[in-house]
Length: 366
Image (cartoon, rainbow, N blue to C red; front, side, top):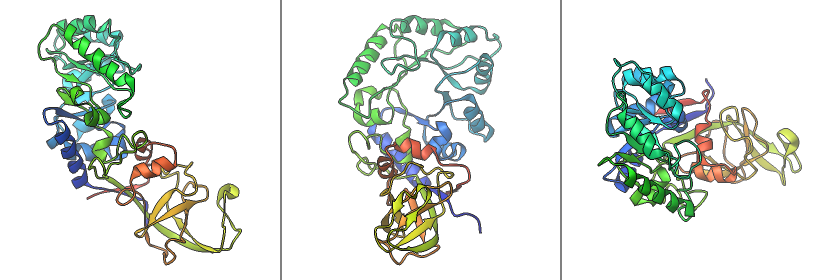
């Protein structure tokens, strides 16, 4: 029998979350973010399930986009970080990928394209305060005109920006970014320019920033963007976990008081107690820094991690579930144990945990 580490993924929950998001922004089109292997859930499988229900898919690289074309998806795909070298614009033009332009070299590559290639749907990336990618606000109107006048782009050119602090809605930078974006749009002499600004957190917090396209990411997968800042859970947002990470108990040890557990003997048993060994570790994607007390669900009972996480195994305090036996089911996160709860114990965020699940874990869609 093969190793029991399994990620069980729910199509119903994925589409439920999409409907929750649509209800938050009923007038906006959806760019479903499937970059980073669909936040650890599987690029191809997630995209195939979402494609009939969304307007576009968002990826970080042309490799991700090509993987989706190769499985037959014809939906529009947005290269959210643009292209990394000139030849990728050739591919984008022939494949119909939409392209974000965020720096001048990309415009030079665009101008050098052969006239025979189809025009590209272009997005101008503007830095309104994230301080990462994008043209500075004073330069943005001129860059917009350059893109608009290029024979290699379709009109109207679209505009995109990104929030830095939307998960903390009271942060003053949010309103500054909204104001900067609005002031920029007023300088663009084209009517009805398609706009995109809102990520997952902004969709739920800033109605005025939803615009023509929204870009849900973490909320599609059933995790809250506010778990660490506002203590708002996925359940509070009516989201359901798409991934439930499962394994099983492979040994039950009856340890004596004073017995050490695992590497560095981090945990010393405070009394005679049952300890479960489960088939999962940091080699599967569980955070190695998880402290004693991190919740783990055994059968239907919340137990706790004890001892250092190993590459392939974790030890669990079974005093709350003393009848547990070899073969009993274990949930690391998902149904009945939100990923945000685990993330908070490890001082990480749910993005880290979901995208960290490794290839040796079996993926099983339901």
